[in-house]
Amino acid sequence: MIEVSGKKLKQYIEELEQLEERRIQVVEETKEVLADAKGEGFDIKIIKKVLQIRRMKPEKFSEQEALLQTYIDALLEETS
Amino acid sequence: MIEVSGKKLKQYIEELEQLEERRIQVVEETKEVLADAKGEGFDIKIIKKVLQIRRMKPEKFSEQEALLQTYIDALLEETS
Amino acid sequence: MIEVSGKKLKQYIEELEQLEERRIQVVEETKEVLADAKGEGFDIKIIKKVLQIRRMKPEKFSEQEALLQTYIDALLEETS
Amino acid sequence: MIEVSGKKLKQYIEELEQLEERRIQVVEETKEVLADAKGEGFDIKIIKKVLQIRRMKPEKFSEQEALLQTYIDALLEETS
Image 1 (spheres, rainbow over the protein chains, first blue to last red):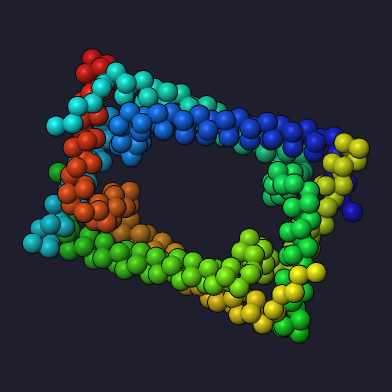
Image 2: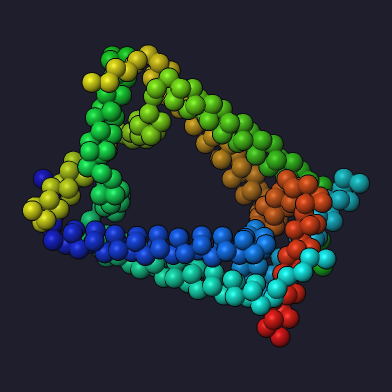
């Protein structure tokens, strides 16, 4: 039989449950902000792309965009 | 051309970025708590099952466990 | 400027697109089987638990169930 | 006690297990193709963007790109 410290287990469980509540809180608030933005006519998909781009280093973003264009052009040449 | 209020967009973007920071903070803290628990010998998979069970109404949990047992028994009968 | 072989790229893209079609096919068929089972009164959540258990080695499953019970008992003792 | 048809349950379980095998097969083959492409110097992230773009209607893609640029410009104006 494995011995388990109920006291320590309870402490970890309660800490994790508080963190889960904070996570759910952030998820709910994010949904509200997105719903507000949508209500004012913003396109949520595009807002998420802007957030994604802002998380990247500018040079990394332009590097990726250039490589994407290179791939698209190479495919177009192949299929034209 | 679609008109977009830069001011409002900036406000939404900044709000969403703050929420994303809070989300990452919770994810990091959760990882730390789980790492601590693992370091003290707790099984993380089982801790997550305990958390899942504690989120359920007790009667719902026992109902599911009973139905699971019924399905397992029905399958055993069929394959024995 | 990065040189890209359009021919090889096209080949990889087409292979990945065929794999994506096969993946979507499996997802659709799985949805249909689950819908049929639900229609015949089966509980989908429990069916998924049965599938999960059948993927585990029997001794591993009973080991996890025993440890789960140990954690639950330790918590009950701590909170009673 | 809930009555369950072991025969029907077994049939659904086996069907779902076959589908799961097919799904895992597709996942493995996809990993292999991506590994090959990476081995030949292709950027997997960009290949996945190309696949995503090819799944979209061309006009939808250019519409999204135009709107993205509008949002980026509006933000730049606001922060310059």
